[in-house]
Image (cartoon, rainbow, N blue to C red; front, side, top):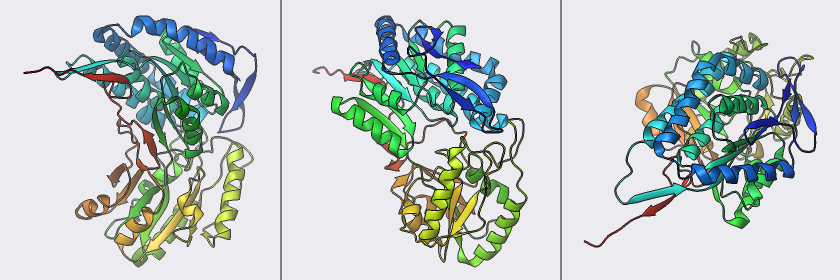
Length: 460
């Protein structure tokens, strides 16, 4: 398969003719040859976008809403195929991607279209921000793009999207959708490539605003490129999510539910849990159940399966895991079992490490690998205290009785706390607190990021 950029309404190879290969997380086979963009591809996209923007920013809300509904209908009609394609490239199950990426994208598009045709409050006038850059990571990338693309188009902006090199199939999915719904030529450009392309987009003076998601180091690089021009920024990066298991919770029969947010995605997604807190009173029994559960794990060997043990997105992540595990041991961490990479695909059994000091580097930093840190505490308030030591605050899960939830949740320094379930399928974007987000986090199409807002006042 050949995956090209989508520029000026057509699929095009990069101007430098360079490509890179995308390999299957499941078996290591080659999935596609992908166009590798450079600065000139960004310039050509900008030229096409500016032409499209001039006509689109003055279009009616009804016209823009119709485009969003057409895109939602296309995704719905092709949902199964789209979900399979993304799952194959991202090392996830089709069922999971269908529910948490494709269906969420459809909901976002329709909700934005509905909101678009409602009257604005009296005295509020908005106009498009201009040309917006969207930069997203590989995990559920169609969803991450759509939740930014929908308000951008609703407000009348033109858009340039940089797709993760780990999920180039999303560029193909989007390009085919735009052609099918006859999106105005040049309104949305989609580029493949690495971090250098993202920084060119972030730093180009022709782009007014940047909305991006990814690991903290990527968001820092984007901010450094964009801030000198005082661009609008909307950055969602960094996760050190915690799961807290309280007393009076049936962990024996619900171990699969507790482990799913850790293992499905292997700690590589912003929604994954990476820290586990249990009470001393049942820690020994809990760990025995956990070891038995891990021993019986079977890998997800194709998108059609249901296993929560998914492969790593790329082969090199296994070595990263080994390095981080060695470092954790040097910080006095104790592993449950030391994994080894499978010869086919990117399957590495997850590692759970205990007894790390709560203020250690490993307890603070992002890992983006299947290395999960368990801490046992005497009281539940200690779990909250140590969970809050991380400088990141994306989300958390509390496993326990409802009557204890509010007391724990209100003290956790995160953007989202859920009770007894993993809320990946929630359509609302989670930006988090502390260093998990930066900039203008208003996702409304008529808010201060996607639009320039003007208030009108008159003398009585």
